[in-house]
Image (cartoon, rainbow, N blue to C red; front, side, top):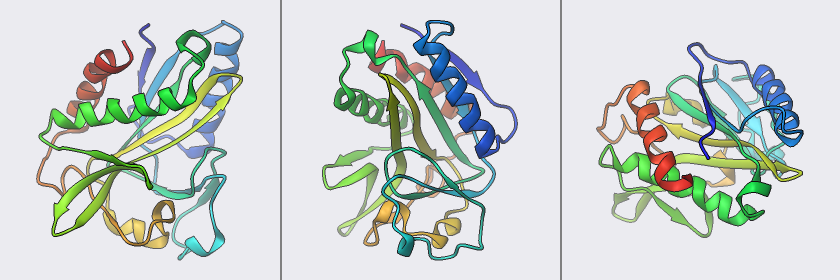
Length: 208
């Protein structure tokens, strides 16, 4: 099953993104619209998941803060980060939320391999991680999902070339002992269009 792919050409505000997802999820549930993967960037902002802790918001004046409604804690979104909002009907895909999350992880890992980056999952830490050597692991992608009546929304945030200093206003995903990285920080310099192409190609290998 191939979803509709939408690629935003300009940054999308967080409220606009939430409104779009709410509408599309309802339409998918009613069989009035196809499944959808929306690739976009946000202006700089912080989002709070359902498990966010007040003490993890270190600089509340730095950027706008939005309640996300997804699982997880605080995260940063901004230019240079590819957001993939994934709206799928799990009733047609086995009604298995755990398998869906694993497929999201595999999807991003597969796409990153196109750029020579080996990303890993860690059972004790959400998201995708890269080994920086000397026992250091940095996060390159965040995953936060929500499922309503077996239709998914929210999804994946992959760091292509964001300003990593902007993570300093939060404890990202509640994890203090590890850092964040990006493709460009690792020495790989794809364009956002190249990242999109890798994600679209990897989709068929994972979800197809």
